[in-house]
Image 1 (cartoon, rainbow, N blue to C red):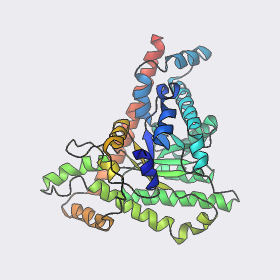
Image 2 (image 1 turned 120 degrees about the horizontal axis):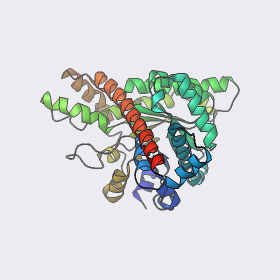
Image 3 (image 1 turned 90 degrees about the horizontal axis):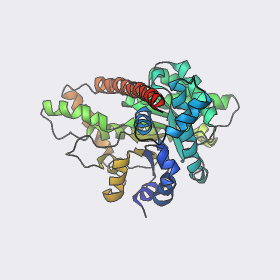
Image 4 (image 1 turned 90 degrees about the vertical axis):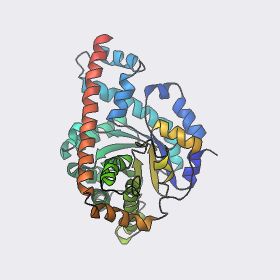
Length: 364
């Protein structure tokens, strides 16, 4: 049995944090699904920037699109390319979506990162993408900013499956859970069904250690290096279990509503001294997802280990985070900065992508 299927038996779904037209056209994605048991895919502006600007897999589609509409903006061109990829990938995962009772088999596409602080703009674009792609097994990615929280609640109420991205702090995660449940309750109050609406809360992992570790070094504490990101994840999982197994969600659960699973993102290892599968091996628990970059995915298939690791030592997570704060390290400030930097990085990738598309169009 593949390691990816072993993960699924342990209650965790493995998704791939990558998409490219070539893997769709060649049958590579279909092969990974069949052989490994891959359960879904995520994309983001940085992934699309690399995919579209490297090689010539998109050239024919670009040429056709601009021939049909010569005055097409680069933003519109990108959306056409991305929508085609997401729709085709969703079709590859349709059987998994159906067989899993609409829990897995999702493909995620992100709203423009330029809308990170614009709730109404996010809602509008999310609905347009959802209707344009016209597949039930897609998730619209919305950043977990204050504006994003407003959009998340509204989109869930409209029956749109949502992937909440760029989460770094437990406090912001709690706000996301609240938005998810409020959206479902609003939908129920309107007399609409609450079953079949998927959602994940994408908690970014390795970037936390990359930011905290140097400060731990400066404080003379190397024992906690490489452990705070996982402790952060453990605290979020404790909250997940408390809320979704509790009274607040009980009525929704009885009506068929899905829990909003925690999804571990940014799970490649930044520090070469750590295991290259650290953030897969140590984050395994029921009702979770890990979206894994290609190199980490291959490494995990080769030498990863499957065990119920996330809950091991979970009772010590709060103490680890408290120790960091006692050392004078402001975790809240770190996670706030990581969110802000993450938005800027996606915006930069998006702008670079549009510039590169313009150059491609001019060269064809």
